[in-house]
Length: 316
Image (cartoon, rainbow, N blue to C red):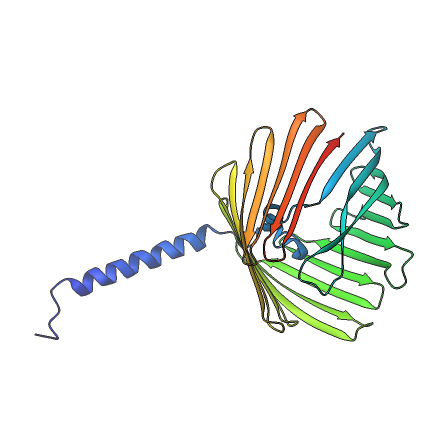
């Protein structure tokens, strides 16, 4: 009796297997693998999670004013007043009050973007993006400062294919890097990167994957340097998204997990998170009028007894 099989069981099992196989074949048949979408750049794999979990938190007061001179050229003025942390062996943060002014010039058209910033402490920041062709773009970032060995320049050449992207990086200090990402299915893309830092005599390789639909985005990245990053974003509705990320350093055994939300209202956007270190953060952007935004920022780190609050206005 133990080996008895009721009549029809094998037939039903075969029918179920046949139905599942037929369904899988229909899915693959409907996918046109010769017309896959172009993936996002390798460096932006965690874009949605970063936007939700890591807005530009600040402490103190901030005022930003942008004046457009014409359709392509504009000037910006920024004032920041707030404390700055200094290195200390104590568990509690030590801060000193500072203030600085930043002047900026922007030029943006369909193929070129030029952005420059000059700060009162002597730092100069510049960003350039130029579309050399429809598929090839040049990006450059530079920061010049009076401090020795702190200035850096980075050049990126980005090539956009039909269903893939590749990037070549060149930087000072004999820094070389390259990355490639390919769409494997309409929702899945896989990529890899390699880099060499000649000044520090270090090299490494990395691998990444990204899966996205209309409702969610999942990304994973691992490198030979011992770093692993995972992120997941779920779109609950048109206005609400939930996000989480996982950061692990194999060499130092450091682990950080954070979870947050992104709530877009008609006149405001609210983002917040909490991480495994006990740090809670919130960031609010509210549009008071056309061209006038109010900003609130808060970070509470109970473990380090470090509490940061900031408010600001953005005009233009």
